[in-house]
Amino acid sequence: MLDASFVRENLEAVKQNCRNRHVQADVDRVVQLDDERKRLAQQTQTLQQRQNEIARQTKSEKDPAKRQQLIEEGKRLKEEVASLEKQLKQVQSEQRAVLLTIPNMTHPAAPVSDENKVIKTVGEPTRFEFQPKDHVALAEALDLVDFEAGAKVAGQKFYFLKNEAVLLELALVQYAFGILLREGYTPIITPDLARAEVLEGIGFIPRGPETQIYSIENTDLCLIATAEITLGGMHRDKIFDELELPLKYVGLSHCFRTEAGAPGRDTRGLYRVHQFTKVEMFAFCTPDQSESIHQEMLSHEETIFQGLGLPYRVVDTCTGDLGGPAYRKFDLEAWMPGRGDHGEYGEVTSTSNCTDYQARRLNVRYKIAGKKGTHFVHTLNGTAVAVSRCLLAILENYQQADGSIVVPEALRPWVGKERIAAQK
RNA sequence: GGAGAGGUGGCUGAGUGGCCUAAAGCGCCGGUUUGCUAAACCGGUGAGGGUGUAACAGCCCUCCACGGGUUCGAAUCCCGUCCUCUCCGCCA
Image 1: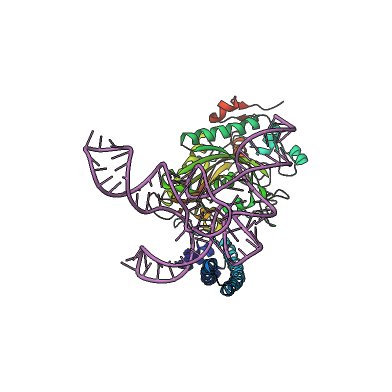
Image 2: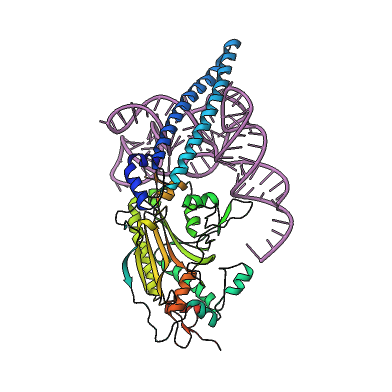
């Protein structure tokens, strides 16, 4: 969320940004409510000041009549203050509610449009001397994924990984961790559940008809949609020393998504599923570090996909598609030969610089040694490997004429073979 | 899951209704002394908000896990929630 006084001072820019991002938000209301909040706060404080005086005087007042008078006034004040505080809370929560609908500001270089900008293409779409299959057909032929069993046990869009698919998942996790450990990231395995308030802090809306989030009945717990939630929540309410930053984590978790409101689109196979495993990067840093860490995360993503030998392109996400918390976002789209009629690029990673938007909600700050006051940190996240989609891309790009699948060289140490042989 | 004990500033920790404007120590910052460093000594050191200022300063309010309550007055008493520790149970 944005700071109310920032909104006040940059009213037009904030409104324009909302338009660019196709967000309907009552920006003026924030300022109105802020005025109201100040007015109520001042009134409250004046009365509280008097309350404190009375408490002090009552203690030393020996005359019973005067003492009684003070007590009466104290009682009256208590009621007035209670009523004002109630109004104040009301205004504050309303203001927060409006602020939550306003998206983060946007990086000046991000494309202002409804079309993402391709800024780089690496490798060529894979060519085949034969008619390539999609990953669903491949997985079935090689007995790698059991969608039917998934549906039987948990429902549509759940699946069982089998045989080499299991080894590939484990290999991808090891491979990604290996690369990021060398880059100095701290490895973490996070909870797969988190409190609703942590989800809200990161920018998710855990309850409601359109929610992407599964909730656990009779608790305030949700299944996480990404480790970004738990990694970001890890330092809630923390004040860092400037010298401790940046903190860079590589986290492993399962991700759960209801995919409500997205039926029919890309539903085949592993592309859009309710549960998958993901290795995620997350960083807490100072404002002057975030831009370069964002570039760094993007380059780690590229390293990972280049190492796997998968063709991909890099996309600078447009304002119309940025979502709430991101100041700027880059996606990697890998070539997926089985997608569409003749293959298409499909999103496999996403890295966002959220500046102080999440930190303000989560109350994560830092202070500079010897200086007064605190500042909000910047947070960034980036996908290292989203296993289901990455697996999809590997199966489709590495398929051979004889129906077998070559294992990318980088993963062989963990898979233990060069090729997944065609069966029967 | 059961029983008990707790949650106080960056950290340790005292504080059981008004003298808390939260002791003391550690750490940190500045100074004095000093070949250098260290030690010693002196001083200063939380956050959020409001008001105010050219900018400081100043003044005021709030914050002792969180949310309610009792009281003229709450870190302190009561209720709820969350969390931590110890013991027991259960279990990979």
